[in-house]
Image (cartoon, rainbow, N blue to C red; front, side, top):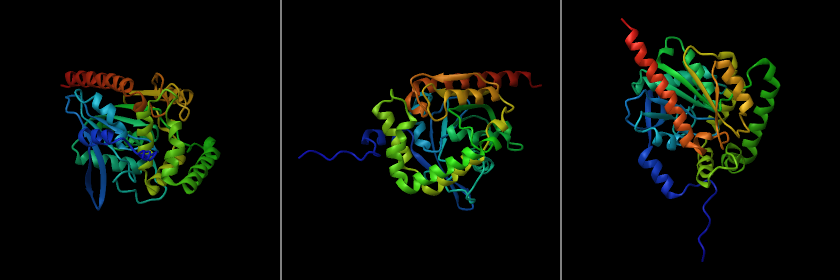
Length: 303
């Protein structure tokens, strides 16, 4: 008798083992009952990379990028509030500042005084408010945005925001998390994606929690990324050349507002760092090198 097919949202045991060995999850207590789940890999001498995932993903999605950068630096990936084992935020309709406060509290506990901040998709709507946090911007040496979400908080996009909120919540109600992962995850990658990349994207989406996802939808619909750019530090923007969610044209507008040149990731869709980890890791290595060079110059110029 033939074996039953694996569930669509499962990962091969070898991949789960690779995650457990190289990028295992641990839970960090921040006080007042608040916890954040994080994954870390690498012990290089460079500035740490702190990686923020998008609305349909989680910390595990950074595994292959972390492995490729492990000799250069420490890669830290969090599960945003309401994702993984991370405690949701207290308000139902949080803003970027709420997520940013949680991020800074985590980095305080992890003793990360200086790092490069990386935000993918919705992660951009957390990263930029984190940089604007009063007396906290000095924590970040550079900002890297990958397929950044603009958000729908601008007055001119209010109608679109209402439509997106209604569509996402209706899809959640009709399909549930598992159904969303099965039906929507394919849009996050291009036709060139490997079966392994597709499986990872489905698996990450299937691990969402309803409350955390609902809060993230409110963040998406209530934020305006362009209104908070540029930031007072070197900013780099990349996008999957075949991204149909945050399209290259939309990401080019973000790059222009940030004073950056858009870097395309060939043969990749929205989840480009899962689909093309070599290319994204190489780009992030360049971001890291530039930040480290600026750090050395700054140290030499200090009296």
